[in-house]
Image (cartoon, rainbow over all chains, first blue to last red; front, side):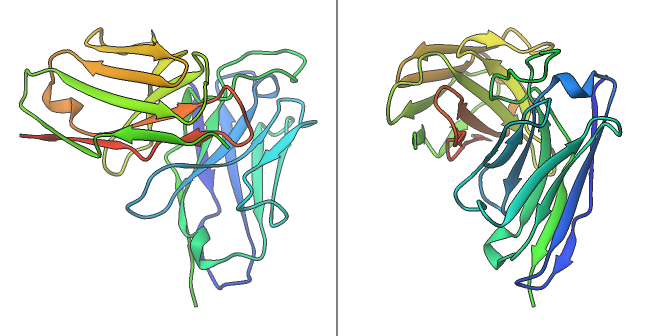
Length: 126
Length: 108
C-alpha cells in the first residue's frame, strides 16, 4: 500500500521560512510526479506545486511562485517544499499527493492525484 | 486559468436517496476531470478520474459523467459514510490545476 507521510509543519512568523518533507514508500518513487496541495482552515483545496519524477519539471501556483521551491531526492524517496517569505494567507494544512501515471523516465504525468498524505498544518502568525 | 464551479454548495439528502452534484468548467477540459471525497479531519480520497472511471475500491453507487464543460457526480443510494464534502479537479490545461469550491452533502 502506498504510504505518504508529511512532516515539518508548525508555527512560523510572517516573513519566516519552513521546509516541508514528504516521505514516500511502497512504490517506485522516481517514476511518479508528486505534488503539494493545501487547504486553509475551513476552506477548499488549492494546488500549490508539482514536480516531475525526474525532478526536471516544476510547476507552481501564482500565489506561491518566487516564494516556494519544490524539490525531490529520489535516493531518499522524499520530496520537499521550501517555503520562504511566508504570509498569513499561507496558513493551511499542506498535503502531499502522488500522480497516478507511471513513467520510468520520470517525465510524464497526468495531473490528478491518486494517493494523499494525512497533511501537516502550517500556521503563519505573529 | 480554468475556473471550476460546483453546485449546489450544500446538498441535503436522506439516506438511501440519490444525490446529484454538478461541476462546471469555464472552458472545455475534455474528460480530464476528477472527483474527490473529503471527510472531516481526513485527506481527500479519489473517487472518479477521466470524468467517469471509478478509482480502485470505489463502490459502484458512485458514478461520473460529462465532458467539455459540464460534469456530474451521482451517488445512487446514499449511505451514512457518504456524507462528506466533494471536490472536482480539472487537469486538462495546467498549470494551474484547479479545484472547484466543493459541495457538502449533509443528512436531511
